[in-house]
Length: 446
Image (cartoon, rainbow, N blue to C red; front, side, top):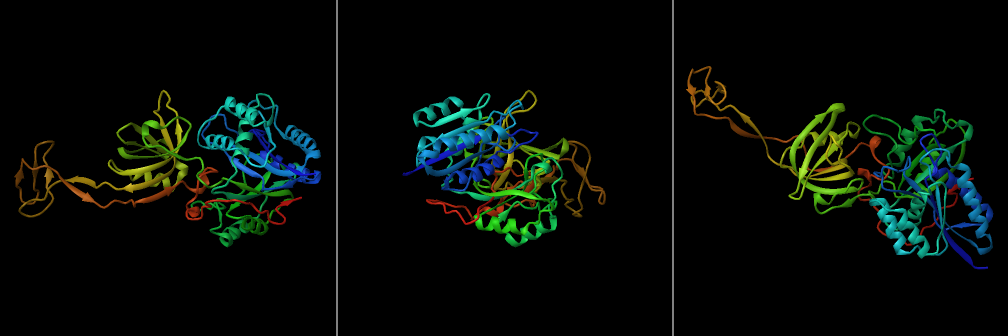
C-alpha cells in the first residue's frame, strides 16, 4: 500500500501554571513511530507573533510531518487527539487547544501565506476555517478551539528559508515544579566549545544561565544552534543532575527575526504587529522610572515613541545616547496607545544609520586673555573675572563634541531576547533555501 503524507499541527495546550506543547510533541514522536509512522522532518516548533495579547505562554505551535500506511491514519489521528486532550490544561481559562490534520504531500501556498501572516501579524479563526474547508483538512478544537489557528500556522510554516534547531530535554513528571538541577559549569564549558554554532546559552553581561527555564513546565533545558549535529553535541556536554525522561531535536524559526516586517512609513504601523521602521530622532531620550529609555522618531508621515526597557542592557544604553537628528532603524513590537501613553514600538533592536552633530553651548572666551567668560545673567552678556572687561553683546557659542555612540546594530541582551529575535552571532549564518531535510540518526529518545 502506498504511503500517505500527513501534516499534524497543534497549539494552545499549556497555561501559566504548567504544561508544554513541545512535550506533547515529544510524546507523540514516540507513539507515532511505534504505530509505524515515518517522520519526514524534525518536529517543527513555530513561534508565532509574540505581540498578540491572547498568545500562549511561549507562543509556540507544533507540526509533525509524517508518512504512513493509509490503514493506520485513523489510529494516528485518534492517538494525537487523545494525547493532546490528556496533556492539556483544559481547566484553565484561556487554554483552548486545537489540532489540524492536512493529508497531502505539499502544503498549499495559501496555507503558507496564512502562516506568514500569523507570525508577522494577526489572523482570524474565520480565515483559518475557510482554508481548512478549501483544502479538505480536518480540525478539532477544545473549548473555543483557538489553537486551531496556531495549528494551521504550524502546518503552513515549512521552514524552507532561515531556520535553526533546538534540542529539548524533559524532566520526569515527579520533578515538575521543583528547582531544576543542571551542572552550570558544564553549560559554560559547552557554550565555549560550541560557539558560535549554538546561541543564547549564557548571558554575557550577567553570567546568567539561559538554557534552563524557570516555570513549572516539563522542560529541563534546551540548547539552540545551527545544525542538528551541533545541538546534539552540546546536549551531550551538558551534565544534568536529575533524571532526563526524554529528549527531541526540533527544527524551528527561533533566532531568525521571522516576525519582523518592514513598513515604508511610520503611519503604517499597527498595534500588536512586529515592525522594522526608519525615522529621524525627533525628541531626545528621557529616562523614566526603573531606568527605561523613551525617545521619539518621525519621518514626515507620523511621530512614534520608542521604548528600550531596563533589562535590554546594551540596547538601552545605546538608545540613551541618541540625540535629535540621528537617523535610526528600529525593530520591535507595536504597543497600542492607552489613556496615558501613545502608540509605542517596544525595541528589540536599534540600528544607528547616521549620527547628527552634537552641539553644546559654552560661554565665549575673553578676546584679551582667552579665559572663559562668566555670564552676567540672562541676556545681559558676559564679563571676564581676570581682566574685568564686560561684553554685553556677546552670546554663547556652539561647540561640536565627539559622540559617545557608534553607527551600527544594537540588540537587546540575550537574557531579554524573545524566541524569534536573531542574535548578533547569527548574522551571516542565515540559511537561504532548503529543499530537503535529512534526519540524523538518533534525533530523539526514546
